[in-house]
Length: 201
Image (cartoon, rainbow, N blue to C red):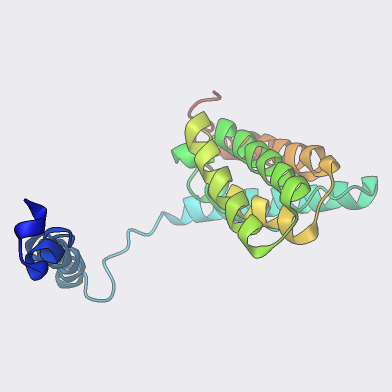
């Protein structure tokens, strides 16, 4: 039967059909979401600023936590401090009720990210694609284990960029996280309106 069909018909039969209607609907939906957000909040939305007491405890707690970690790092000559801990402090002192700021997430997320990135570093090196793989895999594993902690994405990058050794898993990932969580437990609970943590595990 195929041999009797004109050549132009046989070629057309094997061409993939492009669903313009479906693509158009997806495109319109994409721009609708952006326009909808723009119409409700063109540049900025109203910000609910916390009470000045909350700001004070956030400032005081993060100051003590980072200063204590830096002091112990200097005294013990061990690298207990790393840049992602600054972001961790924002969470555990600025929004201590957040699910992302709980001890399970802080300690677990940093350990998972460190372990994943160290494994990828020692298997594949620190090439750009390996860096992307480390961060992406760390995110996936944190979601899988229920330990999502945004600063841990930066932990993965720190490992890759510094070409860290396996000792990084203990210091600063574990020990530094424990110090920060301990400070958060002590200082957040000094304020009457604060309770930390919401849960341990």
